[in-house]
Amino acid sequence: MPDFQHLLLFIAAGWLLNLTPGPDVLYIVTHSLRSGARAGIIAGLGITTGCFVHIFAAAVGVSALLATSAMAFTVLKWMGAAYLLWVGIKILFSRRPQATTDLRAVAASEPQRPLKAIFIGGFWTNVLNPKVAIFFLAFVPQFIAPDAASPALAFALLGVLFNLNAIPVNTGWALVAAWMARRDAVQRGMHWLDRAAGVMFIGFGIKLALTDHPAS
Image 1: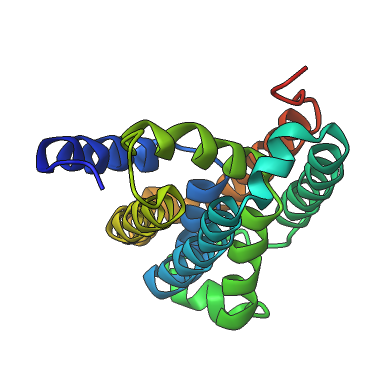
Image 2: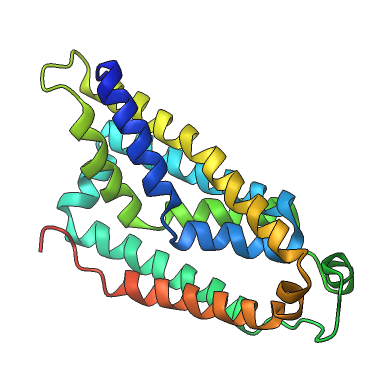
């Protein structure tokens, strides 16, 4: 494990990285806007669980395979891109009542996505993104001493710390989005927010599909 000073730097860097908008943040914000803070928090927990898969896979060397094997990277890349495109299209073409002043009334007027489904969706949003695996392989080892007795254990512990630090950030995104959803101006624009979120998810999917293997 790094010393205290480098550990603080690791935590700070992790918070800054988690504050950066991306597919994960968009997934949290979208569900929080549509169904409230609880749905957004559950979405974040699903994403966190998906991150644990990459952390422990990297610790045992599976993510190293993604970093060195173009075939493995490509297969997971296309699966992830297809999933993001599917999420984007689903949001883009969802139907929402045009006139409303209460987000809870909107939620009651359309089928609600179960919290379990939101959690699983967040999980797969992360697991099917090979860029997450590559990120952990590139970021975490910088904070592991070359002479560490057990690099794999140090990697796993730092990865878990990074992931746990992401929970308050993800919760913050959910709470802020839920607060915004209660504003009249935001509620009147929910139809267009859905459309914008759908387009952004499709954009993330296309961007992932066009991503080259880091070794190429």
